Structures are given as structure tokens and as C-alpha cells.
Length: 334
Picture (tube, rainbow, N blue to C red):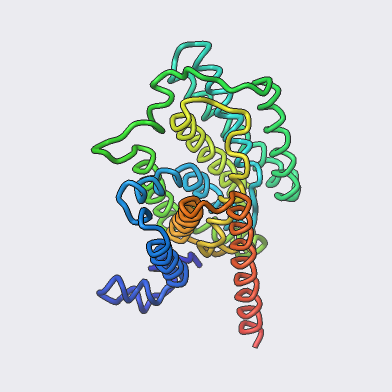
């Protein structure tokens, strides 16, 4: 059920060559797209393939990438989280205010994590136990969280953050940005949880057929709740990264991030119908979104067209997902 390289192609998994396994997996199209877009941008703008620019792509993708980890769990259960951008802004703003008032960056980090997890828990409880539609719940929370952020901050940014609060997003280890290292480590951890643990298998089972999962003894509501909490936690970590990068908290931070997060997850092969997806696919999807954004910026393309391209990519990914789902249902019905 899990759409990973090893689980999806058991015959290919016996191949001794990693490349043959990649070619035979569902990741092949998105990897090919990433390579082709990179080659095209390398010809169009000489600065694209420089080491500093490639590092910049990974660093700039950290916030979207970390948030996309939690979104992958949610979407595999056939849910959606539209509140991730507002959650990042609210948690970051409260964390910055707490840190500034107390003079402690560690209290600021604790406040960021607490607020983001509470937002995720509110989403999860509303979906799992109240039975509300994920789209409506998270849309409402998106508006409430953004409004609360503006009210708390009075529309003003908070500057002068303690170094211990901004360290994660601003520091580097051996000339590699810490935020990029954290992103890669979190993706590896999430991949292991999703593909190697009982909880991960239950996430796929709930997304594939919630009623069958319930009859098999799985506590569906608890699994769904846990996935939204994970999404809240990853939004909090993304908020800490963003605080360090900007060295401030702004009420309009992460506006539109939910669009990039959903785009990366869906482009990476996770089905909006649930039951299918992988962290490796999301990781490649994040890189593709980052490369496209970076390339269009280097080409001086209007930011409006960048949003148009992101929307077009989501439309194309959803269209392909829908076509594949219909084809599988027809095949299963024969």
C-alpha cells in the first residue's frame, strides 16, 4: 500500500542497481521533470547552476519542505490542511513576543511549538471526532489564525529576536545552512515512520479505506488526529526556521505557503483521494517547486506568473491523479 520505492515494486526491489529501481518506480516522472527543468534553466540563465544558487534553492525550500512533511501525512489519510501558512505566522508571532518579553529564546521556541501543535490538534479533533470536512475546518482555522496574528501584533512586525530563537534558521554547519540539514533529517525520519512503522501502515490503511481499517481494529479517529498534530508540529518547526531567516516575525509571514505545500505533496505523487504517497516523492516535489521558483526569479518573471505556474502544476498533478485513480478502479472492476 505504501508508495515507496521498496514497497511498490517488489521485483525491482530485488534489483542490485538503485537506478533500475528508480526507473521502475512512480518517482521516475517527477525526477525526469526535475532534471529537464534544471537543464532548461541552466541554458536560460548561467547563474542557475552555481554552487551558491543551488544551496540557496535548498535553503529557501526549507520552510515549504518541512511543512510538506506534515501535509503528506494528512493528505494520505484523504484529508487536507489549508491552515499551515496561518499556523506558521501565528506560532512565529507568539513565539517572538514571548521571547522578546522574557528575554529567553528557549521560551520562545517552546511557545512556537505549543501554539502550532494546539492548532494542529484543533484541526484534528474537529475532523476526527466532530466529523467536520477537513477543507471547511482548515479553511476556517486559516482565517482565524491569520486574524489572530494581525490582532496580537496590531499589524506590526517584531524585531530584535534572541539569537537562541533565530539560530536554527540563520546558522550554518561547515558552510551548510542548518535549516537545510534539518529539512533532510526530518524527511529521512518521516520516511522511516511512514514506511517502517505500524503507525505509518495505519495511515495508509485509513486513507485507502477508512471503514475497512476500522473493521480491522484500527482506531481511525486517533490516527487522523495524530496526522493533524504532526502537521501542526512541522508547521511550528517551519515557523522557527522562518524566524531565523527573517530575524523577525511578521503578521503576513508564510502567506500562500499552503499553496506551495499542497503543490509539492501532490506533484510528488501523494493522492488527494488518500491511501497513496511517499516522503521521497514529496521531497522531490519540494525541490521541483523550489527550482521553478528560483529559475523564474532569475529570469525576472513576474511573481504573479510564479503563482500561475504553481496553480497550473497542481491542476496537472490532480488531473493525472484522477485519471490514474479511474483507470485503477476500471481495472479492479474487470
